[in-house]
Image (cartoon, rainbow, N blue to C red):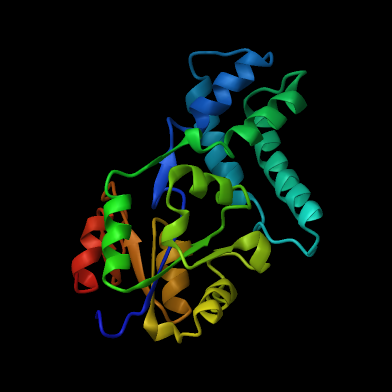
Length: 238
């Protein structure tokens, strides 16, 4: 496969790095500081509500090209999700202040942690001559996160949904990423943790899709499945 694949795209969150703690834990801690009344079931309820709100949200795709307006659209997109979460688990008076704070928290690289093998795997792939790209539905906060985690210099390109005006699993965002490398789909691989967005989206677009299933919980028929990024290396001849 090494001779065929020239570029490897990666999803970002939950593929290269993960939240330091959990989304629900961060939401709860900051919500309590802003007046939310915690119960023993709060964190579990927030987890469940977040999963539902995130799943039901429209794709993070916006019509504007103005950078300032785009950032505001991203912020409002997340405001709707977080508002939906606390509408279900309990609204509180200082919610707007809470949201502004927690939105900035996820822009802070200290809120994220690289998976143990990420740096070594990216180093090896670059040494072997592969072009690398990020292909993610993350918003523009991804850039400071990547810089803070020290992985930005590994990547030739970064393609995110809000700038591409297309979101995974749409084939369009894969096409846009490929155009930046002037390569055909069969010369590219995409690695990510979502069956729908990453494995199926990439495969439909003609790329080699690889599912990163760290917990071993996904049941997929066909396709390449790995448990850690290290297992990617033999797939590309490293």
